[in-house]
Figure 1 (cartoon, rainbow, N blue to C red):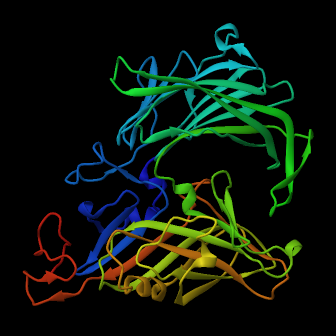
Figure 2 (cartoon, rainbow, N blue to C red):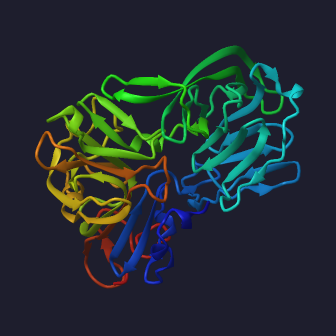
Length: 461
């Protein structure tokens, strides 16, 4: 997976736009359109990496998550981590370029040591998915997939029938000071999106010093077990499910190693003013009023973009949100509003759209089904940039609501970062920077640097 899979093709190919490499951030690009006109393109999650993230002089580079065959193992190294996937076992090593390492290996299936099972260990890169490695029919009714994402690696167990295994035990070796962590909880769904009833347990085997790296690491035994039941949600407010053995295969169970930067919590839904559902396992997030709960509360969709590299006093000339809509009910009209603060906080149950200091400006759009929508919102961004506490590199966040009569079913769903980084919300901001004086040696307000330096804003005087 390369950045051309994340940023729309017209941005990559448009010859009128010249990317300013020195203005990249981990999740954005800035282009020089002409003279003093620029475009900032923001997405959720990382699209750039550094080999040494603490080196401020190193330019951000394009992520390329293509899995490469190195003989007795596979590797990914053109990203924020170095990943090594072994061929002779279900095992991988994730080494963060920000520091630290996590090793994950399969220990047993259904209480039988993997060395006594005779697993079918023939991993291959999935056809058409260069960032996915798959083991097909590793044992009866079981496939494994490893999916590499910009700051995360997911290992999926795919149970294909009733005789498939239900218990998996893993050896985890994790540097104590690592920027990456093995997530000590797994989730699962069957083909009909019914949640798997899973139990997880962790056994701490103590800490040691690695003879290879000299790092202090802890050894964990992680067990995940599926009961054979799946459930449909019957009460979202209290998270109650109706459990059944009517499983519609395949059933997919995931487990992740990820960095401290979590993009999944940058889009999601706030409900009842005190519940926050990030898109950790959901392919879309909701906004609107489900009829079965009656007039308000509403579901508030929420998106947060970090590291927006636009200086104060910039003039915003054009803004477009791009949403990929999955579903709608009763043709809702959605409204976007911003949080008018200098630096938007991470979402939490007590700090979401209901707690926004709303921008005066807002934007509306007609929600479609399985469609791509571009929503102009220039005045919202200008209002946030004009906030006295705004600084270049800060974060902005936005709420998605549905307008309409309370108590009726008006609901929209847009694709989340978890579904696809390419289909998650994108933000395009065109802007100009004020200049003083004239000619080739103009000074750009907000940067305090002469035009022409490699780290300065390009400008034609």
